[in-house]
Length: 296
Image 1: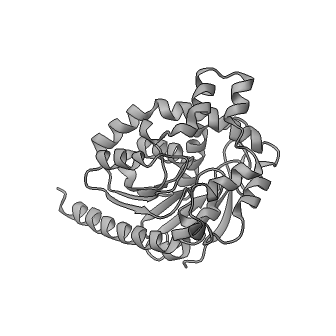
Image 2: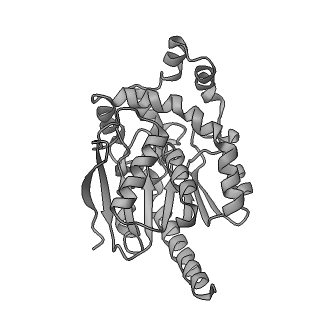
Image 3: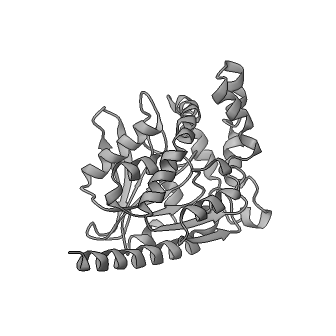
């Protein structure tokens, strides 16, 4: 069955985690990790197609979508929740889709079990200093001097308009017109649930710890070189386009595609992205299977 199934898991700490599965569990696993401020809804346009070749797992990260917030949110705690979900589903090897906030989560998952990574799919996922454009200056000041005033400046985007900007920021009008409905309205509603804003502030502060791990991430990539595919919206206003070159330097053989899209690329280019992901998974899995048959 390829139809998405919504499920829930009570984590060991008591928090309820909502997630979607689709496809045959005997197929290669694909873990889809969304970014701020969305949820597994990000992937609704690509899950049915991908489920024909993969066992798709798309969680709502804690505090997003239909998942409850964690008492002490951090990217390390999020990765622990995702690891618990993977164990619950008895998932061994996996492809991991990294997007925005999902990148520090997915990279931790990958680095904790590097032998289980079949491949990485990189979409507006930052792991280098080159990804930080001028708009990050207030956040840098908050990280270096976490006063109340600096926190207010750094979190000024936590408004309905700021949430809308995640989807429309930098997009040409004709591309923005391809977004169906107003997904930022639901995101804003979820952010205003109990614990929602606390989660956003905690993660923004904790992203400094992700940046501090860039050298560790670089070591992992250099040592392991997992198969990789990059999909990127050239109009993303939050992660500088120079970040794509850093990723390509990390992965000299990586297939890279730059679209006329934005931060939420799948809102405007789902069909093209899904086709590339399907091809990448199929080709990579064939190579992995072949390698396994000739290993001594």
